Image 1 (cartoon, helix red, strand yellow):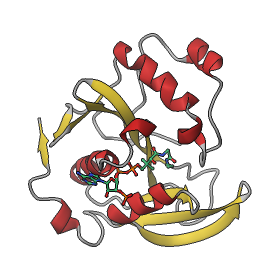
Image 2 (image 1 turned 120 degrees about the vertical axis):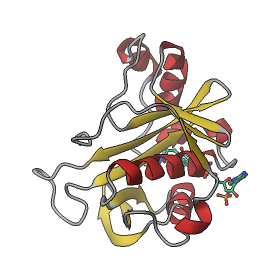
Image 3 (image 1 turned 135 degrees about the vertical axis):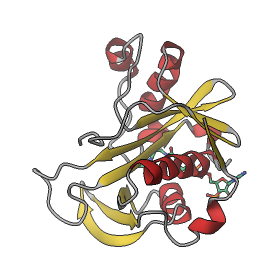
Image 4 (image 1 turned 90 degrees about the horizontal axis):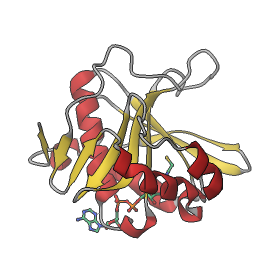
Length: 192
Ligand SMILES: CC(C)(COP(=O)(O)OP(=O)(O)OC[C@H]1O[C@@H](n2cnc3c(N)ncnc32)[C@H](O)[C@@H]1OP(=O)(O)O)[C@@H](O)C(=O)NCCC(=O)NCCS
């Protein structure tokens, strides 16, 4: 995965109705460890990582990477959203070289619409900085929450295939958003 090329990084924090999308800070470290150590979070994405390994490897001052946003609710990190370019040199198929949306949220905040709100804001930001970019997303079909989120965000299927012992779903979202973009966008964001 690569970065977003000419896009100035990091952007100022992005504020939505309930959330802030911002850069990582030292106070986020426990939540970053929790996110990657959670069996629920890791269930469809290759499994949880050992907590002791994370305690050793996660920096005291996490810096993140271009395209990666910490999602903050009332001053606490609740998840990560990232937009990174897929490798065009070592990948084939309709997603090679395209910007890929990924999302991970702590289980105690699932079911409140925070992932939809944060991903909508990140995609809206991308539409402004890279207006012609078609975004792709991959998820296991068995990951029902992720499949519902992809649909809500306006992604439509481009491919399904078997990989890593499971059915994988690939979707894309046209520049400016998928079906229903007008209904999702107005009044949702306040970028400062
Ligand atoms: C995928 C994942 C982000 C989805 O989280 P989520 O909480 O289900 O998604 P949202 O935050 O958009 O919440 C949507 C749910 O909140 C409900 N909701 C409650 N209040 C809401 C509100 N104010 N606004 C919108 N939705 C609301 C919706 O009805 C919806 O429920 P439903 O799915 O039962 O229909 C989460 O399960 C996760 O982090 N999984 C682990 C990581 C992973 O597998 N990532 C995918 C690979 S990239």
